[in-house]
Length: 56
Ligand SMILES: [Zn+2]
Image (cartoon, rainbow, N blue to C red; front, side, top):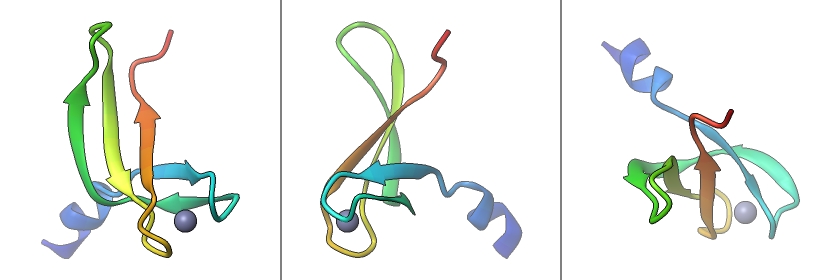
């Protein structure tokens, strides 16, 4: 059970901490250009983070 929850954690780059972090409160969003992205917050400072998905 807890492993499934952990698997959801996506890493993103926080521009404020200048480090890769596991995003908090992440959710999948679709951007205006039709691409999927994960939107979340930095666990350390709360800065919004994005990770583009399905990049080709
Ligand atoms: Zn941060």
